[in-house]
Image (cartoon, rainbow, N blue to C red; front, top):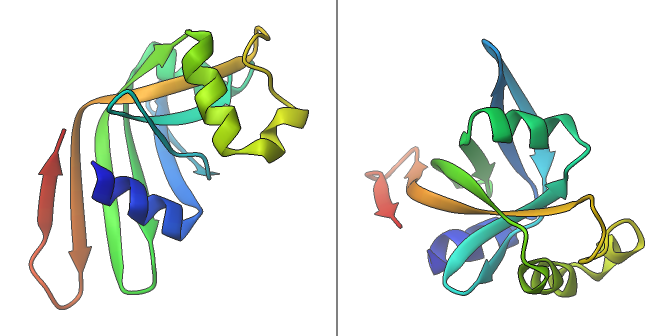
Length: 130
């Protein structure tokens, strides 16, 4: 999981895919955090992406660093604890103007049953599960 976290931090932007009914939805994200041994992302509960995840927790993200790419799939589980939100927001101070650990909008979610596959054009894929 640490390798996945470091890769996503290095890339800065990754693309998260959800579904809305039978329509795939993809958008850029930039938040990634490890808290209590779990890999977290952050969004707002008022956003469509949050509603899509609550309807179907299965997601996939993809990131590319110019040489290799990562596809991470799994379920996202909402964690409403203030401590988890505080940890994420401490890692991304620029978000503190829009989000608070105690507001009704801030949402942090962690990956469960995750499979990460690192691929490149020249090597064999490497799979990590957590």
